[in-house]
Length: 258
Length: 257
Image (cartoon, rainbow over all chains, first blue to last red; front, side, top):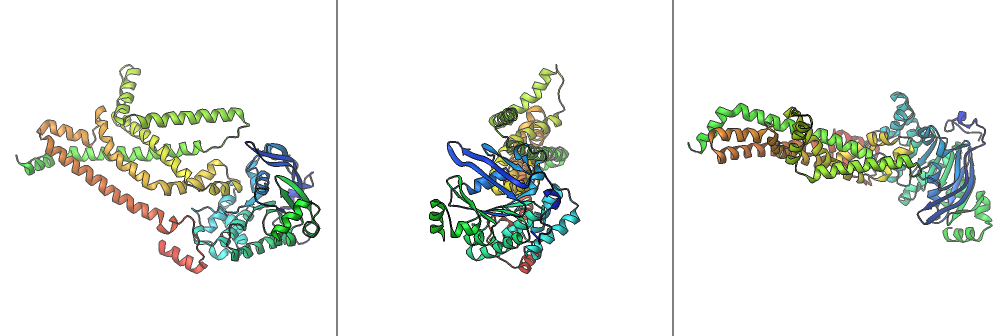
């Protein structure tokens, strides 16, 4: 945490709760289909948590519950001690808990710069000039500042994802959720996105990453959650998960993917 | 009088009526299409508000609003505009004890709400065609529903539905002819009046048919140009897999402008 810089808004960390996010006994049921059962974990400032597990294990649903894209059907999720279902300034919460998607979701009707400024001007009410300078700062960080006038459809997948990361960072989030950010990319573009995520992690950004990239999880994560069939089977350091898993289900999964 | 003498007679004697008729037809079609589009967009924004089932009151209210919108769309799509015009115009007279509405205002009102019913469905289709990720991308940076619709979704919807909107405009130019039943002096009404004077039904209506065709054909060409200008064919690629360097993108964008 020594080299943390402006990704983290220090003033947000001054709160009674030591955790940015606290997930307590969360369950999620779609109709008759139980997707999550009794999920418990916490996110501290500066942590990089990777959530791994096979498809359909509930990883993405869990992530989407954290920024309330999905509403948990039982249990509760707290942001700085405040129940996210009862949050007063909900748009501000969404800016503080940013999200990067598998399918990028850049706004097709705007160029790269506008993609990164629209949220700042309309949601955070920043001045146009300030928003622009800020956007360029983060576009620079992801190596996309030469493309400010490009339209999303003119970019490659890796470039789009880098812009999407800059767009999320421009809102100055406290924690950034990544929902399989490299799964829709051609293999040769996975690296450029992972490199940026590595740098973000190094700079002290709090990250919650659903990923199939085991190498990234092993090298970058401060904690790894292994999920299977809607439950967290193991929550441990990457060393323990990857070299010394306790549960049979974890061992089986790792045998299949490594 | 032979064919050409009749035509000459129409033009020399009634040109100012015809021009007024064309003006009224265009006015009511343009205003009706624009107001109808606005009605359609507003309905589209309201329809897509998602209400949490846990909030019972809001949920029931939303269901009720959806029901009202459904009733509006079905009634105005399901009955002829000619009948709607009579019911609204004479309905007002009946209920107000003999007062009548201004005919031009009534005409604008009727075409607008009739077009609105069709536009609501066109916009609905347009919204369905927008990738769900566009909504999520906007919500993830804290935009509320109205910001999401205004800045992200509606601009894309507009581009997708532009051909259908232009189609509605063309239809309105022709279909507003039914407004003669409430005495609105558009092109058809004017033609009818001329026929009552010159008794040349075939030739006069043929003349009017040509005017209608020139109007619709000319306007459809103009709309096509506008469409091209707005859409910019490069931007139609939804799932681009481009991988251009910054310079070539800048070049390409310059060419487009």
